[in-house]
Amino acid sequence: MLGGMNAGHAKMADWGLSYLPDIRQQRIADLGCGGGRNAGELLRRYPESRLVALDYSELSVEKTRAYNEKMIRAGRCEAVQGDVHHLELPDDTFDLVTAFETVYFWGELAECFAEVCRILKEGGLFLICNESDGTDEAGLKYEKIIEGMKCYTEQQLKQALRAAGFSSVEVHRRSGKPWITVLGRK
Image (tube, rainbow, N blue to C red; front, side):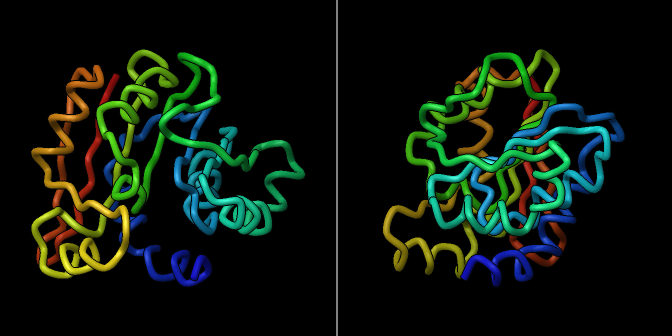
């Protein structure tokens, strides 16, 4: 399944990444790293960066380590198990935090987004990229089938980001698809 996620979500993830401004990212955290593909893409796009890939699932962490083995050996990537509700990452450290297809499972969004805000440097960016905009039929169908899944609307994401302390929020939608990319700036 994790391998399928890498391939199946690549186009959407790359579309979401296209909204990042052309800036030099030094420290990146990819939360809910899944199979590790997006961590690898971030490392490729930002060749001077160091990245922490975090997931709740031990299996996802193992898959991410295997996918990014070369970057781990080079000292540019670390894959760790953790919980977005209580990130064991230092304050004011990251230039960019990403969350691809994962906030559906985060529970209390404002609490988790406050943790993201805490680890971001002033002016840092938080990128959320979802296949579901919280109103599409397919997303709502999966929400009923998959325990603990919640598809959030643009308004719900904006509200939770502002409540968590983000100073600005920008939303992008993919024409003809329910894809949504949200950028929050600390």
